[in-house]
Length: 264
Image (tube, rainbow, N blue to C red):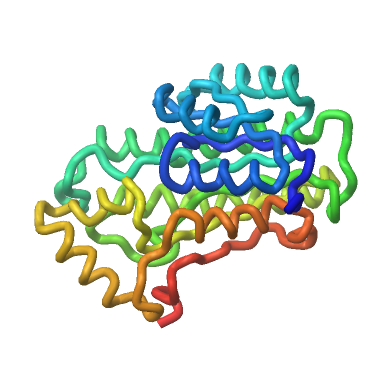
């Protein structure tokens, strides 16, 4: 207990799935958590479930004004943020994402949330975290954790727009990490890359292509060396580590949570 005691945390897309599990783990370990989501009902339910210092703020991560409003609200209620988890993301707007079947509108919709949302989060997160100065690296510094995917590490012919967006998240995480380190801001930035996982978005992957989702899941599990999909809490535990001072010397890294898929 107390691995992030007293730290001020923000989790975007915190109403469901990995975001919800992350908010739960951070709160359980002592953080003051602000949950954001476009889904007011889901986000508010998580805040009420956590109780204590947890609050919910409606946010569209594509909107710069929403990021400005969020950082002002967090500063007013809790002070300078210590942890930002850029978790909000979307998979697809149609069942197919093959190169020849993905139109520009769908491409842009996915990049707007998954890439521009993370860019804005990093931009405003770094500004808010560095206000007033922080310890240079080490314990007490700020931590940004960006949710990517193994789709950002390997080819994804059936999810061309999603895979490209997650590759961009991986790259911007490294860039932000080095930029903050060279400027002595005391802020770390890392990416987390889940594989097959049982969440609403994970189940959406299994429905892509119009086939039987249970058969798709079974086929996906057969490709996992550990022979089981991840649960949201498995990813949340890795995010908790990166958010905590236990990861004081970890920045620009990519933490893969895939049961061994990408190691084969």
